[in-house]
Each structure stands twice: as structure tokens, then as C-alpha cells.
Image (cartoon, rainbow, N blue to C red):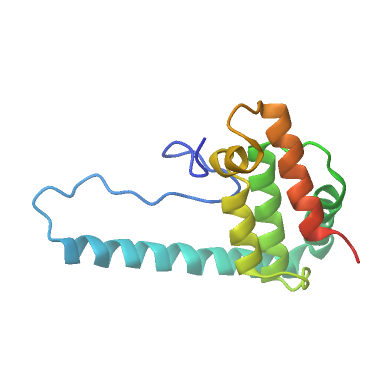
Length: 146
């Protein structure tokens, strides 16, 4: 269980950047191309977020609001769903719809909700249902309305 998935498969709107040709290529050149590709992807993402925020604000607010509702109330939360919810919450942070947490909080949840981290917390002999319950509790605790 990785949060990247297979190459070509997105989990929670996170993507893995890879290259296919490194043999005979200097490390500096590889890093240059990787940085350029990452910057282009980030710029395109920002453009799409702005288009979404301007074009269909209701859809944006619905996506973020639903994510907040689930993380505040779920009793079972599988890893894939957690990734999708974190993606929606990131979008909420980016667009100002979520203001009670930031990227450090979401990044911490991303790592803490992975299977190995959950097993270390709950116990290595735990099953998927127990991990899902613990993951949901982790999210409820972080996003509870005080």
C-alpha cells in the first residue's frame, strides 16, 4: 500500500513523476528536467484551481464540504478514500474554503494514515477493518468541530 500507486495511476490527486531514461544522463540534467516538469505541473494545477473556483463555485464548495463532513463523521475510512478526502481538503486550503488547518496538518495525516504507520500504532496483527476504524478516528480527532 503506497500513496503513489502504480505509475499512471493517481491516488488522491497525487502523482509520481518518473523518467525512463537515466542511463548516461548527468544527475544535474535529470534534476533540471524533474524540477521543470514539477513546476509546469504545479502551474497547470493552479490554473485549473482558479478556473474551478471562478466557474462553478457551488461544485467546489460541495466537494470540500462533503470531504469535511466525511472526515468529521466517518467510522471506517479505507486508505484510498482517505487520500481522496485529503485531496479535497487540500483544494479547500488552496481556495480558502478550509481555514482551520494547513499543509503541514494534511501532510502529517497523509503519512500517519498509511498502513504501516497505522499498524505501528494499532498493532501489527490488526486487520484492514481495524486499520480503517483507527484511520477514521484519526481524521475525526483532527477535524472535530470544537
